[in-house]
Image 1 (cartoon, protein in one colour):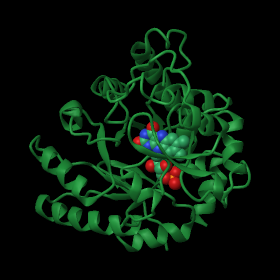
Image 2 (cartoon, helix red, strand yellow):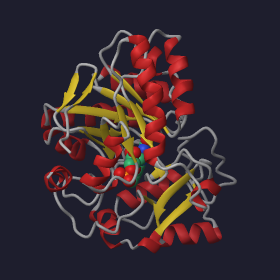
Image 3 (tube, rainbow, N blue to C red):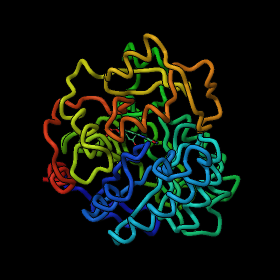
Image 4 (cartoon, rainbow, N blue to C red):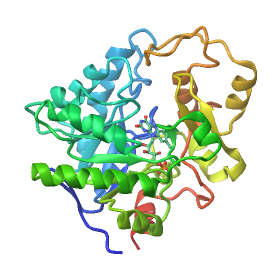
Length: 347
Ligand SMILES: Cc1cc2nc3c(=O)[nH]c(=O)nc-3n(C[C@H](O)[C@H](O)[C@H](O)COP(=O)(O)O)c2cc1C
C-alpha cells in the first residue's frame, strides 16, 4: 500500500500519521515537533499542561494557559510542520483552553472524551481546523448535526477504537468482555456517513483511524475500510524525543501482555493503562486525595480512589503512578527515535 498525503483543509501532512495527544505531559513540544519534522502531525496534549509551572498547585488554570502558550511557541521554534493541540471536551475550563490555543495560532484542535460541540463557535473566524474524536458513527452524526447549525463541518474526524490508550469511549463491560465493534468496523461505518456528508456539502473530510495501530499492515487494513490517516500514540512513547521521564518509557518496553489493565478512571470513564504498584494499591486500598486540581467536573475528591492528575503527573515525572497505554505493546522492546518509528510504519 502506498501511503498518501493527509489533507485537512489547507493543511497537508506529507505522511498520513497524526501522533496522538498524550496527557499529562507525555506529548509536549519535543515529541510533537519531532513527528511534525518527519512529515506527520505532532500533537501537544493540553491536559494539565502547566504541571511544571511554579504556581500550578494554587493557580492551575493560569499555569495551564501560560504553559500552553510556551509549548506551542517551543514547538514552532523546532518545526515548520503541522502542530495540533489535544484538549478533552469534558475538562473544566475547556473553552478557555481552546481559545488560548487558537490565539497562539495552533493549526488543529483535536478533541474527544465528551462531545466537543463548542468547537465551531470558538474557532469561528480563525484558520484553526477542528477534528472531533468519536468511537461510533452515532457520535459522529450528533457532532455533525450540531456543527451544521453553526454552518460548519469538522475538518477531519478521528475514529478511536477499543484498543486505544487512555480514556475510552466504550462501556466498562464491553471492554472487559471484549464485546465491541472492531476499529475496522467503526471506521467503515463512519466513512459511510462521512461520504454522504461530503457529497451533500461538496467538501472533503478525512477519516482518521486510531487505537492499537502498530504496523504498516494494520494501516493497510484500515485504509481498505476507508481510513485516510492514522492517529498513533503508544508507539511514540518509547522514543528519545517523547517528553515523559525515561521510567515511563521503560514501563512500555518492559510491559507484558498481563500488565494491560482496563480501569475505571476516577473521572468515571473506563481507561486502558499498564499495571503499576500505584494502580494495584490504590484500587485495592484507595489513597487519600490531597490537593484537588479541579480538572474534571464529574470528579468528587471524597469518593475517588486516587487523584488522576497526581497519578499521571507522578508517572510522567518518573515516579510510581498512572501510566496510560494502548493495547498490544508486545512488539515494543526498545527505546528508539521518532524517525525509526515512522520508518518502521512506512517501509
Ligand atoms: C499515555 C497516553 C495518554 C493519552 N492521553 C490522551 C489525552 O489526554 N487526550 C486524548 O484525547 N487521548 C489521549 N490518549 C489517546 C491517544 O491520543 C490515541 O488516540 C490512542 O492512544 C491511540 O492508540 P494507540 O496508543 O494504541 O496508538 C492517550 C494515550 C496514551 C497512550
